[in-house]
Image 1 (cartoon, rainbow, N blue to C red):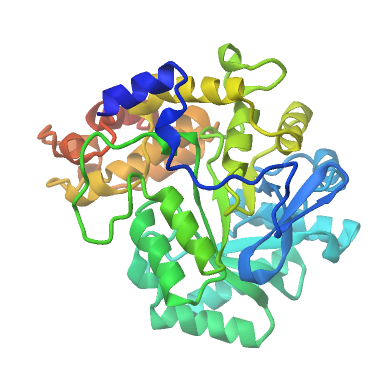
Image 2: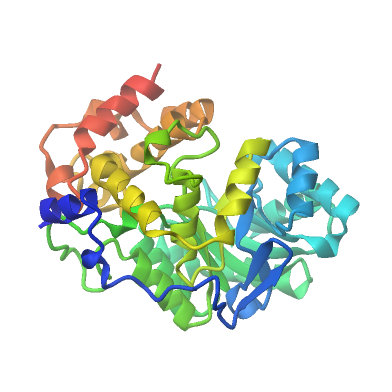
Length: 402
């Protein structure tokens, strides 16, 4: 089935996509969309914040003059974290808010649940962010990289959020999620304590699974991402998409997929923004060319040729793209951190973050890496998308362990 699906992609067939969500037409904007100048803004769920369709990722931040220009061009949402650039990203956002006006930007930042965390460590982390941001209140405060659904309703987390909210130190709560999306995002929506979710969503999510997935009852759909986004929107939980370009600041030369004046990266952004349940897409903009490329993307809808080129790209590269569902890692009899390893490999190979990727890889116990692999093949048997997990984890050792 998957081979036929990918063959249809390669030939540009659109008939396989009757299950796609309703699209937001640029010529017929939805109720939650406003246009000002050359930028469109969408409502971020029940926060009632209107944020730019292109949001700025803060790891890394652009240089100062470019940062100012990006804001002047209409971008008003900045995604940061206590860990980005050792806190310097937050300092830059704080300086920016002072210069352009605090009301001109929506400040989002995140804290980690790592090590022996508790309520007090969360509060200290957020207070550190407030100091670096040089502000009294954060607009959107998120758990960074939530992967354990039980932590979202943990009393220590909820108490920390409640304490900080009572003190006026943030306005809205949320999560970012890199893996185990089906359980984590569903929990965030169902528990009613989070106003927004940020999760990976890109054109590779059109790929159908190789086999049926019956690992647990509430597994939603194929990759589940589109359905999770719709679920969040149905509860008025805002959704921000990340990893939309699949690669990060170091953009590869993909000219063969260009459709006229539209680059593949612009087509990726347009594709994600077709989903009316998404408020914004986060991208890292590091130079003027990338700024012009990204900010032009929402101005015109995705054409048939652009869509076909996107699908051709997916058909040619899908077996090397990890959907971060976490199934391989959850079922590995050797306890290898396959999902984490493939994410670190993506950071090192395509995001231009080789040192950070090596550092994260080095923090794994040796038995969690390819060194502990028994070559049993369980990871590839369980993977719904036929990703070459063993090959990719081996490549990660070669790329990141040196």
